[in-house]
Length: 249
Image (cartoon, rainbow, N blue to C red; front, side):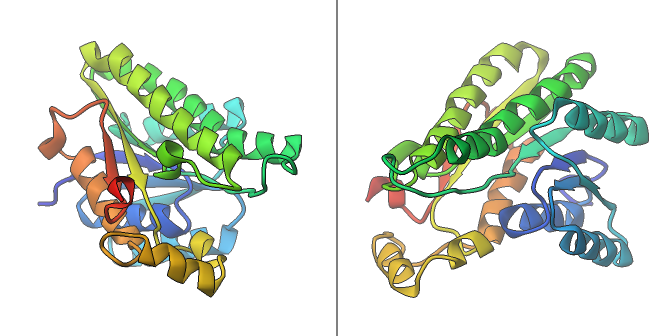
């Protein structure tokens, strides 16, 4: 028996990086996992196929998290297929870095829509189901950048800070219905997104981390596993840093 046996979980942005690690970790703990992806069709199909081949219940959906109708369709399909939804993990995110004087409206809007609007849309759609169930759980992936800020990432920082304020508000609104909402704030995690940074910049970043190294997607996934399980039944409105101590440096 796993920590999430027969739990129904939806993960947005589950085809790579942190999302992929969450999908795999949760499925291995007994969850029925649905995950969304935007463009990574081959990667998503590969994850779905490999996990199913090993007996795990994993289903991929291509969906635009900024489109309310598509979000509703995803939630409705999950519920129609399984009869419930236990946990939603809002993980989908992008970066479009630039200093604020060069940042375009398009770069601002794309990041805010993908990183923050999608969290609102999935939360709103799933909360309707959870209110009827009188239980549920939201885990939203923010970033240490949303707390500390970062030069050249004002749009990303704003979107990730917004996730924290949004989640804490939702936690207060829905607590009376036994619905929890928490935030994970990763620091420098070794993913495809961070691998795009130059080697010199990566080394400098790692040297600034108290633990002296980048984190792994699996280390974030294990914290998400805790929050999704009954081990965290009295935890809501919290921000948990998975950053090697960066927020205290």
